[in-house]
Image (cartoon, rainbow over the protein chains, first blue to last red):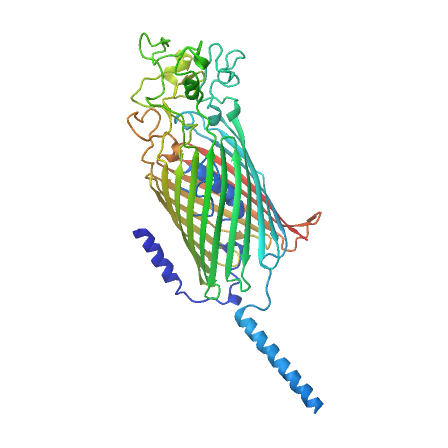
Length: 69
Length: 489
C-alpha cells in the first residue's frame, strides 16, 4: 500500500508539468515515443509470461487465456 | 432598401458562421480527423526455441526443449470517423520434449521398440522404459493454441474520451478460455494528460491431462497388477524389482490421499489503471498498476512432484538409477509422488513506469521498469531499455536490453526437496529464484507512402526482431519475430 501511495504521489506531481501545445508535439508524436510496447513485442511478452513468475503491467496478459500463470 | 436588407442578411450570416467556427475550434467539434484513416492488416509471426534442464512436467529435472511458431493476423477497420473494430486471429503451434513426457513410456521415445509401449488400452506391454531427458512422441508432444479476439473502440468527437470493449476465445488441447473486458480513457490538459481504466475477466477451464502413471494408478483401482501396470516391473532405489502385491516390502503409490483435480476452472479478474503525462516537448512518462485476482486450479495438472521423504520407485533400466538426474540417463523413469498443488487463489500486483525521451532526430530512449509482487511470495523487478536509432528516414534499428529478477514462490522446491507433509508444493522452475538477461536487436522499415502494393494492400512497414534470453537456472531461449503492416487502399 505504501508503494502504491508513492506511485500515486509521483503521478499527481507530474500533472503540474508544463502544457505542451498540439503544434509542439512533433517529437512526442514520433512513433518511437509511443508509451507502449511495440506490437511485434507481443510474442516476447507472451513467452516471458510463461517463463517468469511475474506478469502484467505491460499490456500483455495478466493471467488467463492460456495454461500459463 | 432591398440592398441594405441583403447586406444585413450577409453580415448576419457571416457573423454566425465566424461565431460557429470559433465555437467549433474552441470545442474541437469542427473538423474531425478519423481515428483510423483506412483498414490496416498486420501479418505477424514468431519462432521461439528454448532448452534447459529443469522440466516441470518431470518434476524439475529433464529436458526443456521446446519450439513454438505463432502466425497471427490483426485487422483494424474504421467503421466510421469515430469507431474502430479490430480482429486478432492467431495460432501457436509448439513441440515440447517436456510436455511429451506426460507419457514418457511412448514407443518413439526412450523406450524405442515397437512392442514395449503403453498403447492406451489400459495395459503396458513388455519391458517399458522412459527418461526425463528424452522426448516421447505421444499426443502431448505437440499442440496448437488457437485464439480469436475482437476489440471495439469509440472516440468522442473531441477525441478526449475513448471507450473500448473486447472479447476473446482461445483453446488448446487441455485448456479453453473465454475473455472479455472494457476500458475507458480520458484525455485532458490539452491532451497532455491521459488516464485509462481497464477491467478484464478470463473464465478458463482445464481439460486436465495427468502424468501417465498417476491416472493409470486411478484407472487400475490402485492395483499394481492391473491395467497399465500389469506385467510391468517396478524397481526400488536399489534397482530391485518389487513385489507389487505388497506382501513383502513397500510398493509404489502416489502420495496418501492422492486424487485427481475436481475444480477445473481458473478465473482471472484484473483492474488496470494508467496515467500518462507529457513532461516536455521531448519527454513523456506513463505510470501504471494492475490488480489481479485469480481463482480456481492455479497449478498445472501435468507437472509432477517428487517428495524427499518418500521411497523412490522406477520403471526401466535399473543400472541408470544412480544417473537419474544426468542427461546420460536415457532409459529409466521415476514414478511420481503427486502433481503440483498450489493455493486456489493468487493476488498479483504489477506496478510500473515507462519513460521515453526524444534525444534528437536520430536517437530516442525508451525505458521501462516494473515492480511485481503476489500472494505466493514472488517479488520481481523488470528493467528494460531500448534505443531506437534512425539510420535513414525509412530504416530504424532497435538495440534492446532487459533484466529480470525474481524471488521464489513460497511453495517451490527443486526435485526431491518438497515434503509430503506440506500442503502446497511445486518443482516448477518458472517459480524458482532466478535472474534473466535478454539481449536483442530490431530493425524497422517504414514507407508512409505505401508504394509497394500487393493487390489492394500497400506495404506500410516491416519489422524484424531477434532476442536471446539467458536465465540463471540454465534455461536459454531465442526468439525471432517478424511483422508486415499493410494499408488497404
